[in-house]
Amino acid sequence: MGETTVTTLEGRGDRAAAQPVESGTGQGLLRRLRTPSRPRLWFEVLLIAVSYWTYSLVRNAVPEQKSKALRNADWLWDLERQLGLAFEQSVNHAVHSVTWLVVGMNYYYATLHFLVTLGVLVWLYRSHPGRYAATRLVLFSTTAVALAGYYLFPLAPPRLMNGGGFIDTVVVHETWGSMASGDLKNMSNQYAAMPSMHIGWSVWCGLTLFALSTVPWVRVLGLLYPAGTLVVIVATANHFWLDAVGGLLCLAFGYALATVWYGGRPYALPRRVPDDGGGSLVGTGSGDGGPDGQEPDSRGPDSGNAGVVGPRAPDAALVPGGTRTPDGSRTPGAYDPP
Image (cartoon, rainbow, N blue to C red; front, side, top):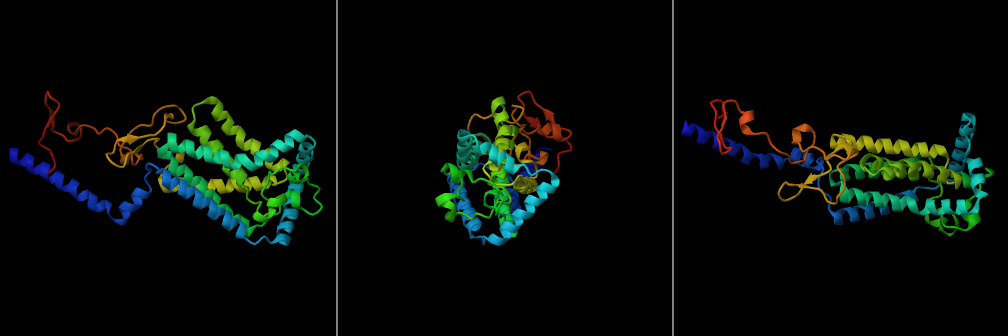
């Protein structure tokens, strides 16, 4: 019996030693890429900088096609009027009559689009490292697919329509609320209004805050932020409301891609991830576990939470015939596998 026991343990050791060989295959590499891991600050800063530079370069390199963009704007405006939902001009004129409000909206349009998005990324990095990569993939893939929209459907914003009657609030009130107005217009493609990434990014921020924060007022702000952004892009005549629909479609693609890639909804992934060295759970910051304020359970890879190290059931409960000695160790049973 004693020899049989030694042979069993050695056999298990051999199988365990063979495991790293399998992880070195292409399948093992793909599995690691699809498993949430702890983000690295230097890599994230570099990735964000390079990605935004590439996005701006590609967006502005798309041929402006002014005549086509103006025709598309006329077509879209006619479509909205047929639907009975062409309210952009009324909102634009109403806000223009209140100077402090329209100036505030100009600066809202120019700044919060970037500041809030970066702020949410930093918060995710610190408080939800296990969900960071998947949620970041949503944002990046949303932005990438938007580039196809700029190329395939060049669109003039309402303020640039011929005879549209819209007011360019940035020019009239001499603020810097748009890269496509005033002295900055030569630095940006003015005919890339569809889809609206102001809406795509703001809804991403709002959903992330609402899903992961347990602070009530933060969750409320998460819902109000994209709603406020929709009002701003329409009031400043930078977008039609249908541009916002285009932004939502791009965002839906981003969530679908991230869900398929990581095998689960980004916000449902474990908040904590194993450290590179020992496998202990790591979660930077003091953020809560999820929308309900509870820590996610720490189950093994087979439960769908890949990459999370959790408690393992006692061997005696898994292998028939094992018994537990008073000091807690297990004696081998008759049905131990060879």
